[in-house]
Image 1 (cartoon, helix red, strand yellow):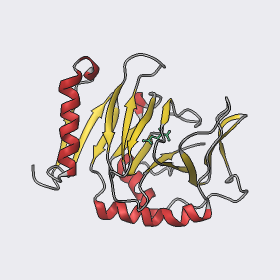
Image 2 (cartoon, rainbow, N blue to C red; image 1 turned 180 degrees about the horizontal axis):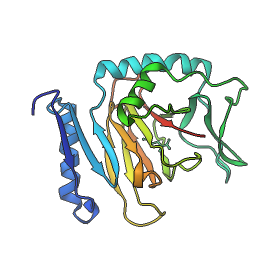
Image 3 (cartoon, rainbow, N blue to C red; image 1 turned 60 degrees about the vertical axis):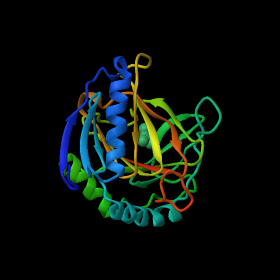
Image 4 (cartoon, rainbow, N blue to C red; image 1 turned 30 degrees about the horizontal axis):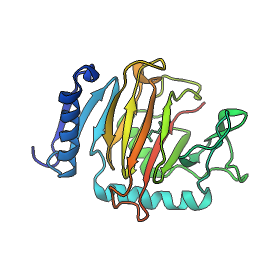
Length: 239
Ligand SMILES: O=C(O)CCC(=O)C(=O)O
């Protein structure tokens, strides 16, 4: 298929029952995106819309440039988890609210732990949200997760927001991440897909409360970030 051609593909939902076949479809889709044989393709997996290769390399670089001032004004921190210990993913946010966690629980906070307001969400990120969701309502949080070597994120639901009728849009930049998708309840079969730099996932509708997480990254698989690692942005309507 020629570069620039938009191709929609629906994957069988019960891929875990036929692991080899489906893993290979996704593996080759990922490879073809990397080789730029398919620039974009839309996969549907358990209700998640996975836009492979949505952002071109130049757009990915622009986004990284737009994130630099955010990281300067609101540096990454390692949230504490309620049971004790710290998350391996470091994070910060832009927008009216930022996601935060400490011994008293998970929540959105109006300020960075240093006490300053979160920086604004860059215009190019708001444009992506509008293009992907068609919504006029803007997200009030752009959570930025940074996965360094060995970082991961356990299976969880995004449920600290007030209204689950709004989707969560997730943008992957930098190293590949192995994204795992479960069901509406904890436990049961899961399916995984490698997310590459420039991929965008829309988690909405029936799948809004689907469990998901990141098992591992392929450290230094991408050259987008000079020191390696993976950035994931999630755009959320909070209130
Ligand atoms: O890093 C990812 O791809 C997913 C991030 C995520 O699940 C979250 O921020 O809630």
